[in-house]
Length: 591
Image (cartoon, rainbow, N blue to C red):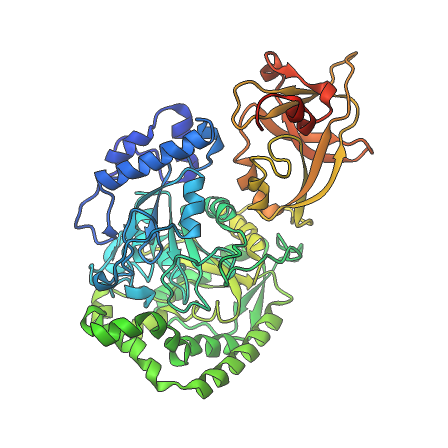
């Protein structure tokens, strides 16, 4: 049972609880208390570590002037798969002999902490992220919270389970072969696997470094996409980080064509087949035109991941440990990784050539579609079945996931109606790299059943006039989201400009002139902000500021910062300066 002070399962509930004062960060000491033997955790929440997290939150709050409104994830706990580094928590990758204390956060953890979130604990996984079942861990098998006989899915088993239980509203996993999707499907939650390189994988113990992705688990598509907006961003220090393709579509086309595999394989699970038939009916009900897609290239590419030389990539991390302490490696994981010796360099190049050919076929087959829909997991095996046969069920669970990163696709798994036996059932939407925002819109349509008008522009032009100006303290909120500076210009001549008292960093307020009032043109910068980043950016805008429509000196209208009039009654009128930089230059204070 959740603690009486627990605000709920999604981000909105947590944010509202903090805004209303019904929840305090100190309450997390009790809310997050857990059974030390709970196998979902490797390092569970404990009073000492949670205390350190609260100290970090207090320091972060001080950095933004003590205003929780400046931190979109203020005080919200999240779980971290135990192959991702978080300072203050050991990283084990599911292997005690491998354990180490990281000296810096993985960038994905750092970004969430910077937004005010706190690490609740490190979660269990199939050791070294090698598996899709949640049973390959020396720290214990992770059962499914909906039916303890059923696997939770892996390798991100613990991260999925603590979100499914409602302990935390979101968590980080990883996804190389389906580890961020299969557990989502089997636990009835959302699993977002981004385009490779959209989120940094620095500070992540590699499985297959060339294919790895950090993934998200959440209770809704909106939560997942909001969090993705905070996590994404090009990291120069990460050689696997990639800059986004801003020409990619950000919503489904009017025709809304969704591909369906020409051959559907459920490995004898008729209950799963019926659940997917029901899902296809739901897809039609939200306006999708279903189009058969030749499945042979997907199936062949999926087979390459574990039956080809990519298994050798897993040996890069494990080679030394296997040489010095092979008993520390889970026997099933060890058996998989030791297959690396069966492949040589010629095999590797030959397989890579075939991967490129198959990926091209897949890209062409998806080019006239908005997305591909597949079952997230075609079976729901019991823990007993997996322990009796460690390889067969695991392989079958990867039927609709293993190919995604090899083909450079993005994906999101969303809950569908449960199977007839009550076990959760999910479907996954996939599309080419950088179609992440389009997939999110499709998934929101699926989730709510509501049609949406496709976004036709990949960016929103926004005017900034204060602390977000280039070189000033809040400009990073734009640059971290991939925004680009377009030009410096000015508003029309009928605006009044004010310095807001008590704000940190210092901020101005702008309003349109009242009737009979004389105004001036105020200098602004125009930035193009990727559409997918707008939500997370707006979440950082504190009252009394808001985004409205500004008229520019040349007659154009753009979105920009305006201020509620009541907040300007005690503010200093700085209209005569003509802009924030000019005011700062004349002021004795620092920006």
